[in-house]
Image (cartoon, rainbow, N blue to C red; front, side, top):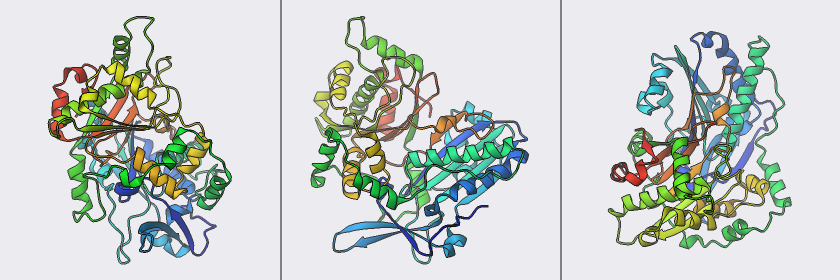
Length: 468
């Protein structure tokens, strides 16, 4: 086990929560399943453990304690991580392993329904307890590994105030690389790596202040947002919630539905919306946004006021799902739209064109990436309020297919399945690619009544199938 060597006696990191409230009490968690032979634990277990701590040693912030302090004068909350060498005993990132009876092949057959996951993978609750002086939070980074007779399961969990999907993507790939290096050298000790990134927030903030972002629509629009007019959360996890984290998790996870759109369905949708070679082409991903938004609004409208408003909120869009020209390219395209029920009663093609008109590519991706590393708190708060503020009548799309979770190789190939532990926010849909051939796996938190109506909507089920 490697302990960070260069930790100041009293280091304090000032943070802006990555997703603010309601995710201020949540861990961001990714689960991966691998198919391997049953002997991998004996040959790889120690190398994986050593590599995990060796990589985390480059991120001393993960060895600290997170606290939130309310500024009574300004009325806002400061998020701090305090790190000191004395905290190692209580704040050490955790790593646990279990032998389980479940088979990965059986979990595959059940479409990775989390009801079939081994219990140890569900042992880390994504809803964090509010910390107290007497009872601090769980470690900021936690990992559970399950060894099956035919494979391995892995859950990595990091406090969402500390890291987003990009950060965990970096950690996973660095960890996998260190493990492969140790196994290839027939050495149980993980080799020391020169890692490209440290969580040095002071340096990142300095770079942000020195960099001039390009004045595109995104920057200007976010800067002009009036937070008083922004939508508020409905049904999200609040710090004042008196229920236990486990009961909140189970209540919200019950409404997460797993859906799949196969590559053949994507091609069928595109072909049907482009009846001739002269028809103006629309990227298929926008057609999917339009179709799902229309069907979702129709299904939800029976529980809403007449001609209610519905929001489409695309946090960022996808890489090319397959190598075909009608898929959107690798660009960050935030969308924030509102339409009434009547406005949504148009053709899917027309709505997809409208979505395209409201898609705004960020022309300064390096600046945006720096911004998303938690520093410009006021602008970031506005960004999250506008683009990541879920509500019951809102379809929020978070598409993580730009990241590399689906190819993390510890030495026995890519995972057979990678997923986000179900998001606990109503109206939130996480989109993941099915593989190199294209297609989407979608985890969507919606009321059961809406899900049942979608299952009976032939427009929807023509392209989308419910897994559970």
